[in-house]
Length: 255
Image 1 (cartoon, rainbow, N blue to C red):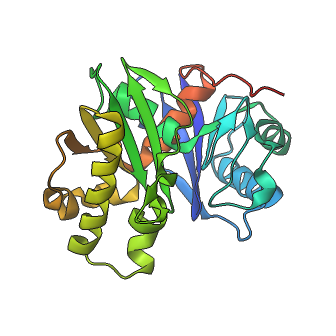
Image 2 (image 1 turned 30 degrees about the horizontal axis):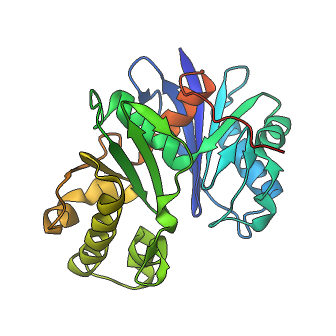
Image 3 (image 1 turned 90 degrees about the vertical axis):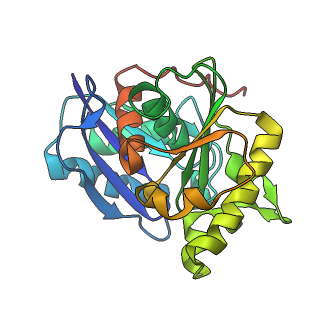
């Protein structure tokens, strides 16, 4: 069965139909730029644009969001407009495209895809999937079960939000070479490891395509570190899985 996945990021919004039996995109994904400011209505318009590109209608749709999501409501908005905070994103997107939409945290979506079809297959210990992009997303699994909305990119690192020091955007904006940036990623991974003692780190996001440029430079981390097998498609696959009911939805937040 196919479902449609949309991955909403701070810089781009991409989506495609997904073959859920194999965990791969059924066709090449379509990407548009995230509007600035990334208000709910402006982003909803771009999401509809992605679906319209494929003429998608009738099938289940899932969408990721770069922040905490509970019961379809977005609770934080670090890299998009603050108007998302407290917004019923599932209702907004559903109304815009004319079909029900399942919304979940972007890194959680990528993590579930990697645990099912990618680098985390068969691992039952503590696994942490980290996505490096505009920010740093995290998905924590123990015994194969997701702990939703961990948002470890906002841990403090050198007196700053970690993602402002070690994300892909920090590398680009600081014009950092691979060695310099790898030292920052290394410090971040050591910090996360000290808190959670995972057996495996899976490194995702767009930078995972160039894992050979920086992962061999990281030292002093006891956990195994591997690149995401689904690379930057993991969020799309995980969103489609959620739409098809393959991902347990986080419970609604208390009123």
